[in-house]
Length: 428
Image 1 (spheres, rainbow, N blue to C red):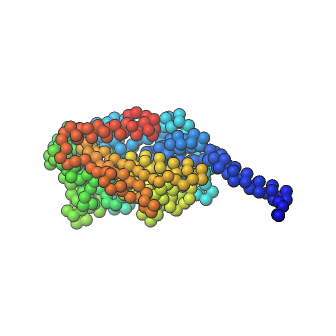
Image 2: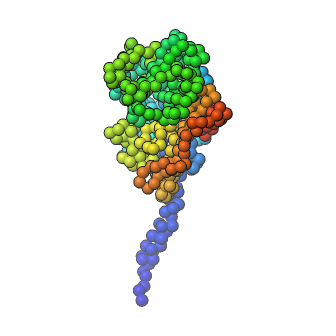
Image 3: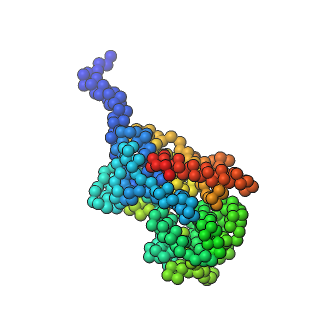
């Protein structure tokens, strides 16, 4: 018979207590975890709110330089005169009331090894997990002639704020009979239907205020999202006001002369605008580069089940900055990704595997005041990559009647109101 001595018994008991205590220790560490979220838009603000919803004991800090957030979604309606500026502007008071610490500063540096964020005011934040929702930046100079100075004359308005106000002011100053020219990039960019909704909303404004004017869309692609639906609406509402020129018909702009409001296409044709709107090449927001999470494309590869960076552990990236095809770069998607990432962080802190990830998106677009269209998709992580659930999405029917189009316009407004309440706690 083998006798156990006192040291063996105590050693075994200690080991057993360690196993029993481990879950409690993990819970304690999870409860005291410090989460820093950078970016207060659709992705970042959602992540901050839902991290606290999932675990109110977390210490969540949101870093965002702006004191209020102006949304790109529905900014086209502002250009049309169908929305007020206040209705697309959201404060952070609701997040503060929910327990999120909000710091209005710019994140300048990220040390993914030491897990520290350095802010523009010199403050250094330690974190256990970091969420990046940096949005987009413009690839200045990628389109010849288009730099930051040029954007002061030919605005992109693809980051809502002063650029949006500038574009609206230019439209208001344009004479009746003038030409609005939009140059549309190829490749990945924020909100694929966005340029075509903008053309629709500019047309709505011009039809009611400057009906002799024309809109010329110079596109670097040969097709676009909801194309048949947009073009059907353009013909019905605006006649021949809008002309779309695809890449096969020399629609690709290769050079911008902002001083003369002129663009040059691949075959050397020049087009003069009275108002020139450039949708330029884009990339992930600057702080993503500084965090070391971007790749050669300028965007951020992520793990599809959690949205943790594929390159730097402990950093989760959501929203427009990510490589997450087939999902589009939309506000709806950013909101959905943020909830998945928040749940994954909670699971990981508790020592569990994240639940299987699934996502949904609906992009509502307004062609006219009562003419809404949409495209929807359902997505999931199949164990290796992100994929679209076949048969689960779709687009608005091409043969819908006026009441259907009006209902979709209403659904879009309803989505915006509900997502604004969900994220910022505000009601437009």
